[in-house]
Length: 166
Image 1 (cartoon, one colour):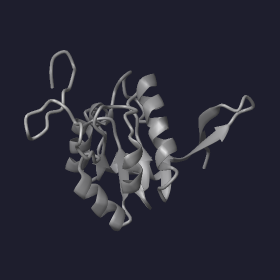
Image 2 (cartoon, one colour; image 1 turned 90 degrees about the vertical axis):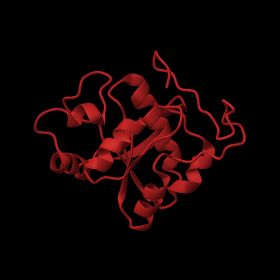
Image 3 (cartoon, helix red, strand yellow; image 1 turned 180 degrees about the vertical axis):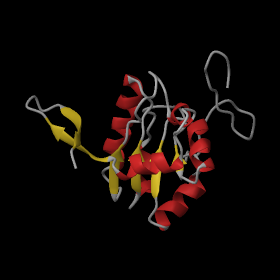
């Protein structure tokens, strides 16, 4: 990580590129175990959030490159997954997460959408967890009430991503 917020991946051979490297989601082994055990997986926008989710007993993943950096080859890892998409609280976060949801919905068992209440602009799961009174039990309640995600085609034949009310 470089200042200001910038990242450059480095391969084990010392080259500053991911060319030729198979990319997998963050916390890949935990994610695969959760799918096998039919547990829900949170998709978040950063490793810090995934680590904090793990600290409270949840399984979470993210992808190299940040919001919306989905790669087609990730789809194979989400066969039969139960996914909760949880974007950062900003337009780029929601846009990127909607794109991820649209891709995962082609292969996953279910895809639900959760935006955290009372989190500041650009806030994320880690910010939400830092608010007094927010904990695993409260997050589990929000997850259990998360809406099913779906996409629809509007009258102009453009893909518009929406939520279906439960």
